[in-house]
Amino acid sequence: MGKPWDGVVPEEDVAAFGREFDRQERPITAGARPAVVVVDMTRAFVDSAYPTGWSPTGQPAAEATARLLAVARGSGVPVFFTKAFATPDHVRRPVEVGRWKLNRAPEPLPEGTPPGDVIDERLAPLPDEVVIDKGTKPSGFYGTPLASYLVHAGCDTVIVTGMTTSGCVRATVVDAFQHNFHVVVPFECTADRSQISHKINLFDIHMKYADVISLDETVEYIRKLTAAEDH
Image (tube, rainbow, N blue to C red; front, side):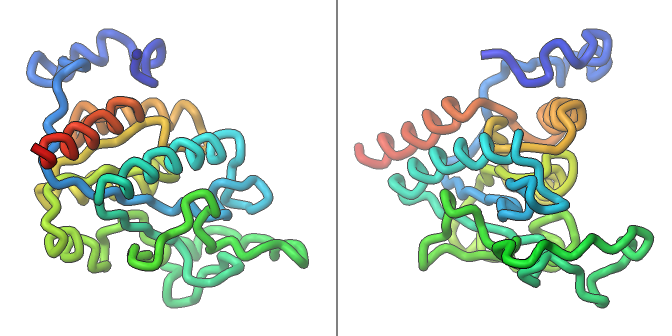
C-alpha cells in the first residue's frame, strides 16, 4: 500500500531528509506494550453540523478508528481518549482562551443540536477507559496526566488517532515522542479539514517522530503481540 503523501511530496523533498530518513518503507519500531490514544474524536470534529467539524474526512476516520478499537480492546490494549472542550456547546471558557482571543467567537449552535463534546458513538469509551479533558491546548499531554497514566499502564508505545492531523494529532505525536514513547499513526484513523495539510503533516510526522502506517498494518502489529503473549 502506498503512503497518503504519494504524489504530493516532491521527490527532492524526500531526498532532502538525507539517507537516514529516506526510508519510507522501513520496518516499524514500535514496542511490545502499546496503548491507543484517540484525540478529540467528538461530534464537534467528526460532524460538519458543528463549526469545527468536517464530515467528509471525520466520518471515515471514525469508522476506521472503531475497527482499530475493536482489535485493541479484544487484545487487552489500553485505550485513552482526549476531548478539546469541557463545555457541551464547545464554547471556550475565559480562562482557556489564550491566543484564541484573537479569533471571533463561534456562532451559537442551533437549538436542539446534540452536545458537541460527546465522543463519537462508534467509539464510545468503556467504563474503565479514561477520557482526558485537555482544554483548548492541542497536545493530549500538555498539562494533563496522560504520560503518567501510560507509564502506570506499563506502555512503551502510543498509537495515535484522531483529529485534526495538522493540529491536535501532530501535537500529541510530538509530545509522545518527547516522552520517549514509540509512536505509531494509522493514517486512515486520522483526519483534517484540509487534505493538503493532512498529507504533508503525515509525511513530516513519519520522517521525524513516528511510524505512519496503514490500519491493516497496525492491526497486524497488535495481533502479533497477542499471539506472542499466548506462546
